Picture (cartoon, rainbow, N blue to C red):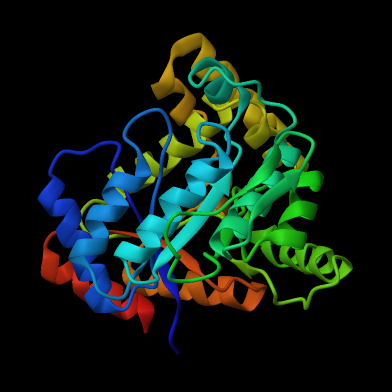
Length: 333
């Protein structure tokens, strides 16, 4: 059984650029579908994706994610049209809104109205990619001079994936996106959440499968140090709960983990990050992230597929490049 898997490259904690490039090349050879590069308040995503475009042949190149505030919609269209040209049609636009802390206190831009900003960004980018004159009368953007990009994009549409959590953002995703990037959905709730999302898609007048779904979190094939990998996974979860605003905690509270969210925040705030990580309940960690052998991770991917996931988010921590390539191949199937 063949699986469509994706990986994320950590461009932010760059220690060895060449090693990062080789990892992408190995994933490309092994049949990994997409490589995502994140952007927060460190290095930008587009530079590394452009470099990766020159080092790979078939793997898709996605922003996972860029926010829709720090660049204008037209600037985003320029970025993606250029990346798509250089990669010969492999660009994927992964969008999100980030949160008020980053948008207002790093970029200095008012955060609200987030859904309107996302909607208008997608609309403007789609117009420019399609070669339409840019006459747009929105709530935030009033564009009336009919600009077009000064080169013809090689595709009239770059696939757009949206990271969304709340009902209004989910409605937008169902209406406009090509893919949905959820986060922090416990494994036991995944099938029902995807069923609810498909209902949103059909309510928007689209076929139920019109929007692809990436798995909400990742499986980690920890071939070198499983204990360290579990600690890293707990650290990521604790950081999102305690330090990344209220959205992620509210998501887990909705699934019945209010006590865990409160405990992690209290421990982090009172005694620091290590205490916050220690406060992550084992049961919650297992519901969010699978850490184990390649076989255990493959079994988890099959469970995700039965729940309705089409693109599986994986990490492989290997002891050698040969082991990394074998693991990718086994996970692809």
